[in-house]
Image 1 (spheres, protein in one colour):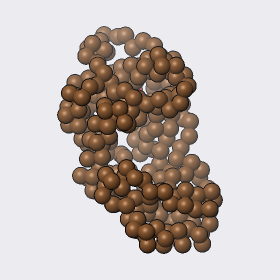
Image 2: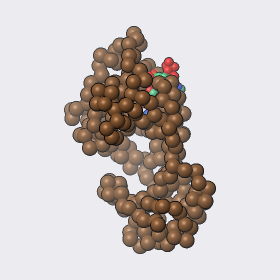
Image 3: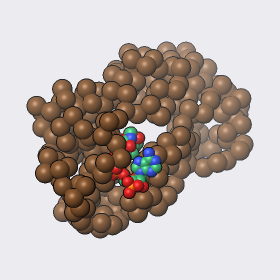
Image 4: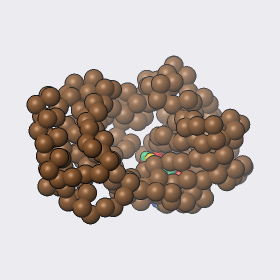
Length: 240
Ligand SMILES: CC(C)(COP(=O)(O)OP(=O)(O)OC[C@H]1O[C@@H](n2cnc3c(N)ncnc32)[C@H](O)[C@@H]1OP(=O)(O)O)[C@@H](O)C(=O)NCCC(=O)NCCS
């Protein structure tokens, strides 16, 4: 069975009707008729996310006009991987770190611009660079307001991390970003340590974080901190 579910938030944000395919198993003949139905229903763009490297499925998607837009890698760690980051190098970050509040929104909207060039939104021609910039700015604002994250920690004009509870025992780092001039100075480590403490305090034992395969710096960062690869995903897009 193949269905299309409208992504309401995405449609409203990009002002174009966007949907995602929900499938049990992809059958080529059904896929092309589903896409025709989507086109007739006014969809401009369809996405499809899969966690398996199933060649018949990938070939069916490609024949129906989908292209690969992103390969995600999800890392997982126990929330107790490290409890202290005390070192002279990180002292100044630990002192200036705070929970982000509404007054930090303008600073965070400025800081986040251009921090995630590896994201699919900057590579898929369906989205303009302005769309992608706006998306991240709205995302960090919604995180502080509590609709896209449960808590945001930040250091003024330097970096931030957003944390979300997934279920009783597990949490997720949704976004982490350090300003270009501040990278490699231990702030990312301090922010992850702070996030891990928050997850532990809330009873969450495991923490996941997703990044892109095209972002080896971030993957090395998570590996250095003790995360291991949990799974990968492939995201396809089709401009109708
Ligand atoms: C990835 C990121 C969060 C790392 O933050 P950071 O403050 O620069 O990292 P730290 O200084 O705490 O580095 C900790 C360790 O991670 C590893 N690491 C960090 N940046 C790295 C890089 N560019 N290449 C390889 N390893 C790196 C190093 O082993 C480093 O330890 P060391 O300094 O003892 O060698 C930061 O570079 C960033 O914000 N990048 C852009 C946004 C992004 O890609 N976010 C993640 C996507 S979800």
